[in-house]
Image (cartoon, rainbow, N blue to C red):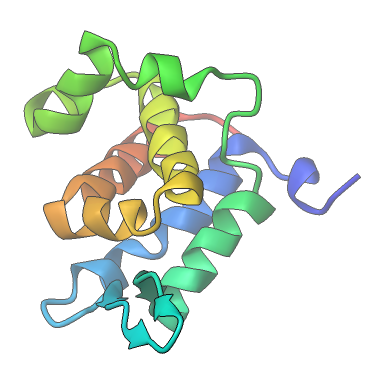
Length: 143
């Protein structure tokens, strides 16, 4: 049994929501794009270089098992519900825990296939909105 599996969902979510004040700081940079460069044998591919704290956050997501494993996020990400949760902060602000976890999983997993998705979610405000909703929902949970 991992350390995380002995924690309640409320405790695991609370660990992530502790990043909110840092992420809300006006000058905080979640990550930056490193552009590809031309080399003698072609081009190197650009990539997103996450800040140290962003890396710790991403590690914590997996360490605390907050990515839904038996969830078809690629299919779900194409439906209207996902689009509304992603694009309408008002809808996300009243989302259920299941919906928030589905959206969160989608963002985290997409980054594994398309570098920089989490940074884009941060820059657009989506990641903070997800974390804020998680904080509200975890505050409503009993231990």
